[in-house]
Length: 269
Image (cartoon, rainbow, N blue to C red; front, top):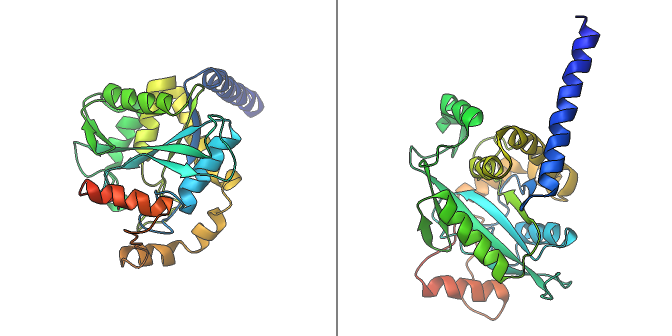
């Protein structure tokens, strides 16, 4: 066959896969958005009042959702869920969006904290076959869940308790500490891929990964700042210069820190 025929065949296959993915997702329980951020602007960055949860809450409200899920690679945080205050009323009648946090723990190693630590053969196997059921554990709200089903039951229970009735918007955190955020997909990417695979199948998951990588360039007002200042922000973060300590007062942020202090934990990830 000629090159033109092959091109038509390839484009037709892509159109079929994309169309199938669109139809499947439109009637599904998960609303895949994509990457939330490129680098940290403050530390901790997922707490009430910071720009990234505010942005996630905005995404959720624009889509008529009272909740949103953000996934991470597990660090030193306890990944506590929280209400992100907003200036406008959500669909559940509350002036805020409930942010659910989940992180994965890779039992076969440290995960891809940086590109130098990435096992590319392992990543290729995961991309082909998905994440093995017994590989990850999960941290959410200070509790470790030993399997995917238990973790998602926790997420669904929280979402329902906070007024969720439609598909739940999901992002991966996406921040990168040392490498180029243009190359490294960042914090939480493998767990996002697992959720997409478990929910919609591995072929739609590929499409959703591509869409998710493009998502912040289309939707985030901060991406140009984060990319253009990436090295500077990474150096500041790694030197502890972005740390924010607020353990007293009456603001939503202060109350959140007070709650963390009560349980003897911190939320630095």
